[in-house]
Length: 440
Image (cartoon, rainbow, N blue to C red; front, side, top):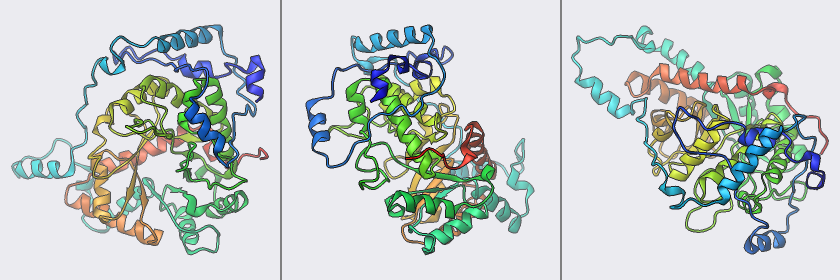
């Protein structure tokens, strides 16, 4: 591994991105960057990696960024590593508790109940956008336009001749959805995948949609466990090494591979807790450690123009790790699974500036899926099983229009969500450039 043996490569870009940013004085948070330093991975992890039949793709430099880390950045890095080596007296959980902000958006049912209690003669100070539109086709057109900017869909199919692939291509070419979420059911080989992505989008490069995947290292990733696909180290094993430079180089190699395959968005890393049993998808139970390794993931992806979307939950560990991450990357988006255990994303309402992606299934119907907007979602990443993507999209748009008419969803909020996703695109330097040309 060249990056381990060439001293001049150590600290390239990583020092600036990990710890150059000072803690946010305005927030008063006592968060800081840092990484737990261990000499080696635990024996359990090493045994797991030794017996795997997959070829693990270790860190490669692949042309690190040309920025030279300054002496000041290196000094700060050493300070932060030293701070993390020193455990706090009462553990990280004993720090100042988080005050959960109040959601800015009213939950649909509450908003409707409050509206019904107002006197009919009392008009709002500012008329909502939908009040200026006639009921019927006008609202439907506005909703249809906004839906094309806030929906990601999944599909079945691996070749251009598959019905699902043809349907997705039509939706993308006509601007009816914002992106595609790929899964193992869409991937058979590298050549097949690149051909499928090229088939799905043959339009203007500047308007290229999002081609998203979840690949963080582990058994639940989208890329199949075939010989030609690299098997990346798990977040748990990355954290166990305690080496941010190794992590950065590995994640840069991962993102470069994804870009070469045609992806421009990756849902990772996971900032959730490790739970009672060891979870290979987590960086561990220390939010400071989780935050610093998440930075290496994000930096490696940004260097190859792949948008990283950290996946969070409502746990204190997730919130604290994200707060540490946002010091360096304030516009970072987040992703979360929305279901019975996740009532809303209110805890992130005033914390996250970027769009909030929500992973959903339509098992309870389109109306229930659309209600996720009132829970703090900006972009719906929807899986409707084997249902036609066109039929799924039509059902969701109809449910959005119904929600606006009955007052449980605001057209202004829907358009604001679309704008957040648009801002994310503009912040990505070369998102629309398409495939990389690096040979694999």
